[in-house]
Image (cartoon, rainbow, N blue to C red; front, side):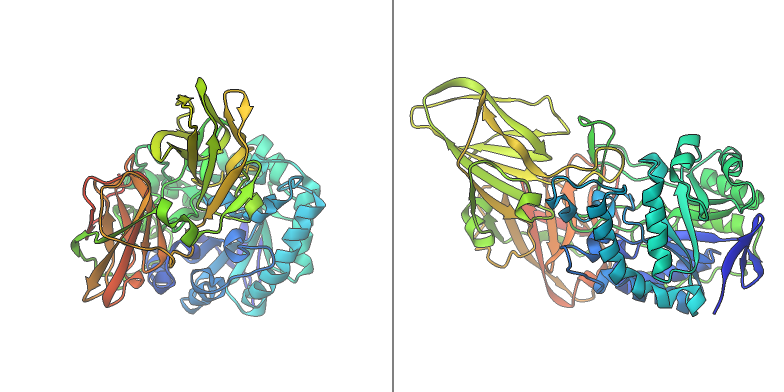
Length: 582
């Protein structure tokens, strides 16, 4: 058994002074087969601690249905860290931000139209406590007080950037204590007055998050907490990307310099991120600085971190190791063997299945007087197909989707008429209706729920209704498309694509290795490898390849399936041995 605590400006582990040099690795962004590799590389860099968030929506995808297997096996991840003699910091807050879908909150919270998030709202607290009743008993045997590696737990995440409900924060604190979480509890906030005032909790260690101006940040923390160690819980040594932006990078020299500042001031540190990994499936989040400024995050979470998306050490890795060696006797850098990368070459798609022809094969239709949201239909992620009929004749007028969340492809009598989305809100669709009327179908994509800020509480799909001019349209047929079961698709030969379609081919592999899927010539969609949702691609960049971890492949035949929303100039993909993320 062990204790981790602080006295004055120093942390102690079993009464021995310790500086925490930690790195964030999210188990849920790395295939389990690579957890040990990434942890070994973290330790070889001179770090003594690994930190991870815990995404509630991964572990309780539907109310009362829990998952702690495969990529969600947090216990195994922590046990691996213990085997490598690493300390572990866990951030199991109900909310994690993390550029993760809905900040880690489960979509089903929005079943209740009166739900209030991240505050002392009893229905929300009841859901949190029910989740903690399952999660925290799994963590308790792993606490340092029980002989495990967990030295600290976070009670909420950057709460001062969101609210100032101290009754809520204290409820979370007591929820952990009452369930036996007898290790150091902490909060993390930006080093600003309002954020620290809103996020700090009596009896809980406050830490700060920043990427530069170290002394200024620590001085602000000391104003509020003068008799405790200073720690940067999120040292932003890189950054994330949105679709349509440039890829963010930060020089190794600059990142190493700020680390040196932190350690020279006797600070502890947690790299955010040390290894970013991948937003597999539909788990990417989004930002929105206003209701009209929506920015979805890309599939890669490389983050320009010391270990890149595929786990390889970068120039930044060795630069920060050199800084750490000034403060810790590291010895030689003993890295595990590099993971093989392979270019499997070009693969021609062999089969095609149009969405329109297969709607009823992969989704049960739902009739309604008005379009419903994903949440109302019990759907977490993916797409919804809406269809109705407008009688004619009618003069030219505007079709208004009120309001679309997030991207709608509108078809009139089966022909694409416009793409309406919140990224380009100025696009409008106007048309007249002939005597015989028009069939209208709308394919709406959930591009990721907002993970940060005041606009998180939003539903996906068509949230209000669809108007032609002033008149709301009724008599809708809806097909939920979470794309979790595509076994019903009926594939045929390739044809000229004029509507959303699935493409399929078989990749024959002699030796499964990491590879990078190039979708040059494709427009926008989702890729599945042997049924695993690899994530989204989009030709607006910056990301041009998708990372395919070797464990997703198998020796022999591998099914490659692509759901393309628009069209491709060449129905083929290429597997490369190098990434291109912008």
